[in-house]
Image (cartoon, rainbow, N blue to C red):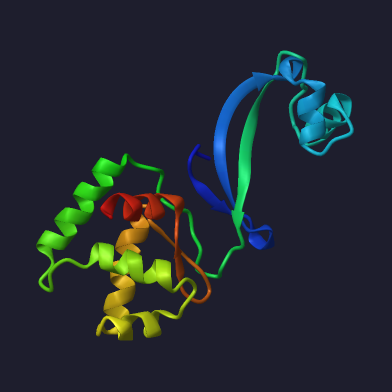
Length: 169
């Protein structure tokens, strides 16, 4: 598990990990246990002990993971790329546009997805006079940069994708 990444949890949807910290059982506070859904620290520690094959003491290490709900999971939703600096992403987009035989396409594709979230790829491809398979390949390139996310039908922008568009004007 990596901070900044999104993970699918079945029907629960997609969760993004905000932080991961190694702590001892003795460092767990009452308020943290309640925030995690337990009645208190004792119930949380009993839960951890029941799931462990080792004897846990107050000095035993565990991981404190903070996360937040991102949204529902579509059948093709997968982990997104860790957030990169916008300058680095923009350089990648510029390079993809420069190497493309059909000219600049990255920002245009992001704008299309922003204006038409969760629209079938075949419909989006038709709007830019592209073959569906080639259009999907391009969207996967944007997804690898952490700019888009996929759903059972269509796509949407990640917060990183929205930030890139905002900077592009």
